[in-house]
Image 1 (tube, rainbow, N blue to C red):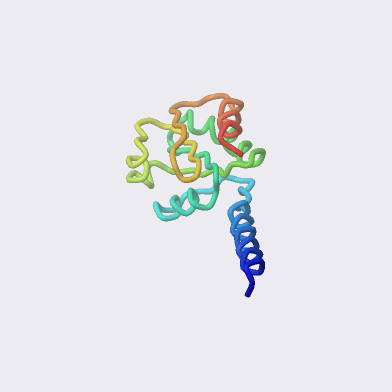
Image 2: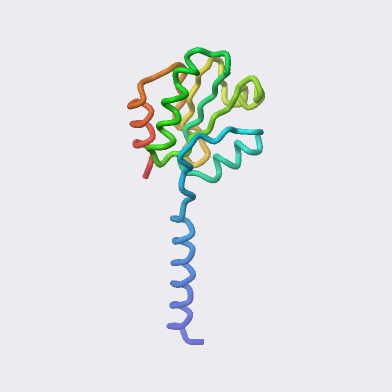
Length: 133
């Protein structure tokens, strides 16, 4: 094998690696209901940008936020995950959730922003756009 052949082989290998890195899983058009801590980690690992809604069924503001979160899931490139804090207390504690609703924006599996309370839809969308590439 000549030096030219080796260089071409290395180039082809690098091209394939780059293509794999840029092929992201498209976000689903509806919220993902987190079933466990492991499931949550899978969601964070699978999508580049994840808007996480920590909520409780008994929470009035959470109920107000629910249609907004559903619209965001349908209209943006971010994945949206919903975590019931009563069913997943350990997960809520791990993310420092002290009140509901708490919205966490995770980018590449790491927390980039965390907000407690309800905001306008445009606020969440602008956060997603700021971190989406």
